[in-house]
Every structure is written in structure tokens, then in C-alpha cells.
Amino acid sequence: MSDPRLEIQMLHDRVMVAPVQGEGERRSSGGIVIPATAQPAKRLVWGEVYGTGQHVRSVAVGDRVLYGQDDHFEVDVSGRSFVVLRERDLHAVASATTESTRSSSGTGLYL
Image 1: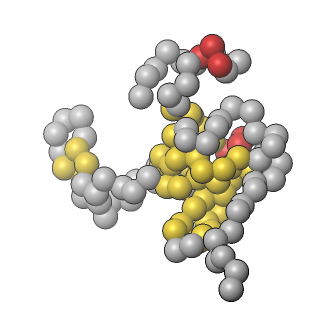
Image 2: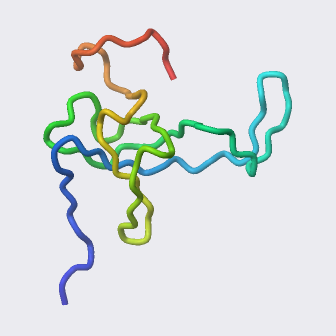
């Protein structure tokens, strides 16, 4: 019997991201509790990069990325949900690598 696991290679400028599970309730800066069921319009979400295509330039496997909830396609692999999107649909990257290993200049914000 063959191994049911698949090796997935992303193509072109595609990025495979595992969404970071929501924290549930959260607090506003004023201390107001916002329930997990509240859905603000056009909210961006964080995810962790699990695969990149050969033409992706700004992110690497293991980076945390910020993307829109409407800019992607969802896929289940081995019972786990992933999101597939184009690199241009990412809004931000938070990585552990230093700026000397990347050609882009950051905003000076550290997450």
C-alpha cells in the first residue's frame, strides 16, 4: 500500500498558508471585550507560510503573513485546512530573519 501523504510543490507565485487559529474573545484598546462571534468587515488575518512557489520573492516557509479573508482559496490536506493565495495578495510579513538576508526595507515595526 502506498503512503497517503503527498508532497506538495507550490507553483509560480503561489503561497500556501496555515491560518493561525483565532484567539476567540479579544479586547479593544479601551478595554471593551469583543466576542469571537463579532465579524468586523474586511478584517485581515495572520497565517504561517508552509510552502512557496519558485517565483515568490518576499516570503519564506515559516514566516507569519497577514492576508485578507476574501483573497484566497481554501484546501484540506491530510485533515488540515490551508489557504492558497498569490504573493501579491499578502499585506505584511513578520519573519525571524534579519533584514540583511532580504532585499526589502521594512517599516521599522517589529511584531
